[in-house]
Image (cartoon, rainbow, N blue to C red; front, side):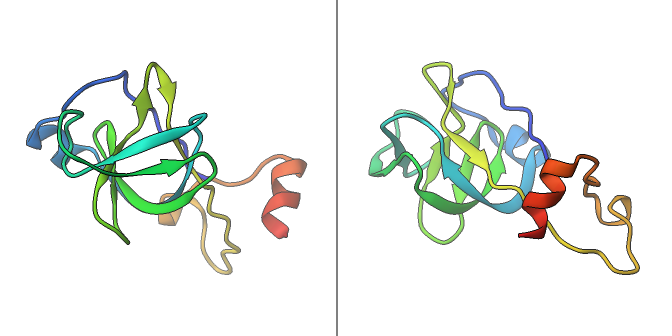
Length: 119
C-alpha cells in the first residue's frame, strides 16, 4: 500500500517538475463528486478531451500535480477546487521470499487492512 502527497491546486507543472515526480503506473479511482476533465496536456487551459465520472477507474502515472493516463490519452489534475480528484487504488501482494522494503512497498500492520488484502 503506497501513499502519495497531493500538491495544492496548480494550473501547470513544468517539465522539470514532471521529471522529478514521476510515479509508478497505478489504478486510480475518481473521488471527486461529479466529473473531472481529461485534458490533452498538463495545463487546465488545454483542450478537454472528455470527462471521467466519480467511481470511474483508470490506469495512469502521477506526474507532478497530474495523472497521465496510460491506457488512453490525456491527463487529469489531482486537485480541483481544493479537493482530491483521484485516489490511488491500493495494491496488495503476497511476497514469498521477499520483504516489502526490498521492493519499495510498505508492510500491512493492522488486521482490517490484512483482511482486505487477503480477499
